[in-house]
Length: 123
Image 1 (cartoon, rainbow, N blue to C red):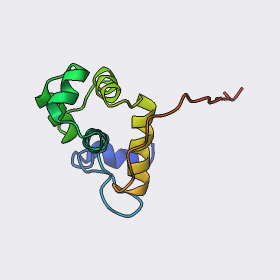
Image 2: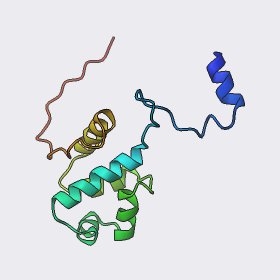
Image 3: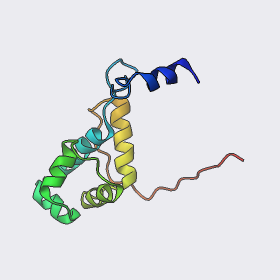
């Protein structure tokens, strides 16, 4: 084992400290960035929490907690809310990656056109 992993195992505080980004700031939590993206997409559509939540089949309170980064939503919930906003899970994932990489100013992606991607597996 390396000294780093030994330290992480013996130091209980290290597991609770957020990792630092390349800029030295704490990395943002996935659920926080997802929430921002969902809120921005909903507002861009001019919708209220109630309207979007109703279409997604979730309570407005739950959607609000998702948007504020308070809930670690399941993939099913993310799919339902994304679908209600005419976003795919791919749109959501790429949007989150862009925001984490470029900062919170990255715009919400427009709904993806059917993606034709090829993936090669190493033999």
